[in-house]
Length: 431
Image (cartoon, rainbow, N blue to C red; front, side):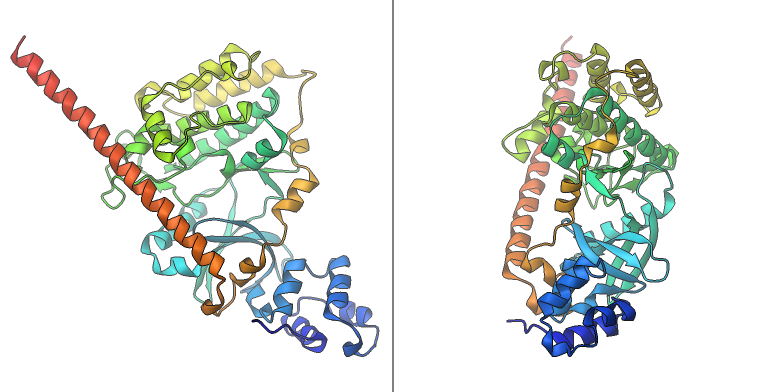
């Protein structure tokens, strides 16, 4: 069981870490004996004064305050988590700039694939600069942990926005998709395919700006590769991405995708924003994968009547099964979204994007994690909570299931082609 620091030790740690300005600390102590104050009371006053966060107070109380310092950055609170690690809100000590820092999980350091994905995200992020893409500021390694320092977006992702407040108004959905398309088009122009476009990777801030995030699966392609990129044997047969927004060709093998795959995923995102559900809400990931390959998407107006027919026409063109039948680039998508937006301008039903993220949603996003999560940045790996290991095992089981599903889908895909080729040959032999 972790020993908690007493008040003198807590104050000493605050001073050593230089988290709270000395003058503010002296003012709160008021010249009294430190032993006369409880840690809870002192921490509560510091939190109320905005000099300390709850997460910082708990980490210091547990004797893990040193892990809050990541080079020039001071961690304030966790704001997100994924399969590879966690994302923290932090502050640059000298510049006072608030940033988001993605820290690779220690367990992922021994996983070559996870580490390569993280390093790939760092390299891809460094090449991008656009108002609708999360900006990368810095990358470093602290205590053996790779870090990616990014722009902090004060808001929430669109998946959470829709799940909390319901489907967006048509005006809001058009505004979201237009900004996402502009950011994605900029990435495409620089030879980058995102491969994981979805509402959860679109961040909406309080000013109504949408930013594309999470480039962990992005891939750099040259213009001559764009039409038919070579198959990467390291990932052949693996499903990489989010099954609810995955293009048919990505189902067959994520290395054989180009920008048209991102267009398909963006179309599925439009469907979710307007209906509040995914295109193919199947009971299992395998059924969803097969649906993306085999089934015709439902019309949006079948779930939400009254929308202009142009919306379904745009959605249908973006989500056609064969890549060559979709838009080749995002330019015509952006032009159509702009036309629809201008057509709707001045509507009484218009809902400003900035009102979609309220303070309660941000509070939930920044809420301190459970007890096990406080171990993430600690140096002692033996202290990792059992629940984390259970979650990791569960994640591996799901990953194994997805790999098996993707292999099956790839086999079916190739069997289809082989059977078709045999049929063509038989017809040729027996006219």
